[in-house]
Amino acid sequence: MEDIAWGTDAELTDEQFYNREQEITILKSLLESASKGSSPTIMVSGIRGIGKTVLLKKIKKDLNNDYFTCYIDLSATSSYQMGELTEIGIMEHFYESFMEEYKSKKFFSTFKKLSKYFKTKDFSVADVVDAGGLPLPLLKTADNYKKLSSFVLDLPQAIYEEHQDEIKGTILFIDEFQVLKDLGGRLDAFLWYLRSVIQSQKNVSYVFSGSLTSSDNVISKIAGSEGAFGGRMLNVEVHPFSRKTVKDYLKEKSPSLVFDETGFERFYNCTKGIPFYVNTFAKLLERDVKLDEDKVKDEFQRTLPYLAIHLINQWSRLTLQEQGIITQLLDKPLRRKTISGNMNVTSGSLSKPLNKLQDTGLVKLKENHYTISEPILEAWLKKEYTEKRVYPFRSI
Image (cartoon, rainbow, N blue to C red; front, side):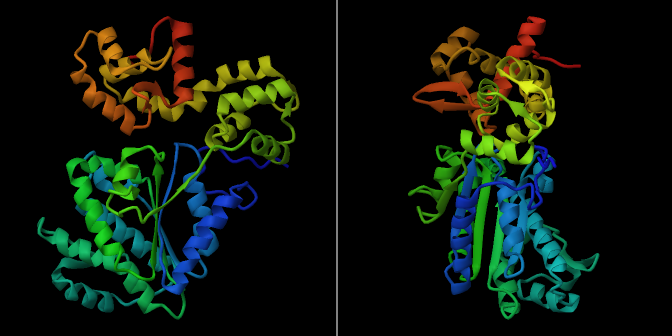
């Protein structure tokens, strides 16, 4: 029986989940220390598609009976979706996520009791409404942010103290952390404020995650020795699967895929061991036919639009200048001076677009050379040019 998930699946069944035993063991050991009053703060990082969200949801599910566990997707914050991330929007999203989990945990607390707690934080009763059984604060002025943030960030510890006979601690999984880059110049202040709250909580563990690598500047702002958490944050980086892991995985989960050695090697080179691409490509391959190198190569070209769909959407939102920079890098890594010379612009004018491309994870800087960090995007662009003799700079 075949049991390969689609690459887009964010939550897997126990049968679909595979490997990551080492990461699971490390993270569980760290998080279970919260029951002893020693709560870690952890950053789970890795490139896009590596399976961080799936890993977090697996651990959340495993620990849910003994802990109050809450998964928060920062990319679902309404202000971020509207194109202008705000601190108030983040806090409202935190609060809504807490209350939904509180409700699903069946820790029923009366509206009156939580309204009283609002009062202790300087909210008036008129500022609180009943939203489907959940008390929801209504913010009328920007001055309410300080009150709201203090109340919301105190909630995880308050939940533990109210239910400590039923749970060992509170664990917050805060995913898509990279979207906080949209705070711009306000990011440092937000991180330092967050740290000031976290360090005073004894029974609350925080697990931050996002499409970041250990070299990302946001990681240094948070987990670096000079960052907001002063080097006290533990960084767990999730890596691509090895060749052996991918081979064993496909053999177990999809025995109808018949690779010879050259075919499997091509498959691994196409997917780089990244679970999103491994799963998606495996789903789209023909079954019960011999998959040699040439066949896999042909299948890769055929399925590229499906493998690259999220990258194609991202490409379409780039400016012409940003798209032009990426096409400059298709042949080899280049210095900024070379890119600007090729594009007939000043080197300084490329600072903003290059920073944006790095923030979106499409381009990375290594040893003073810029290079494309998404091989599937690179392959799709080369395919488009080969077939149409022009890059898809504009779409109708």
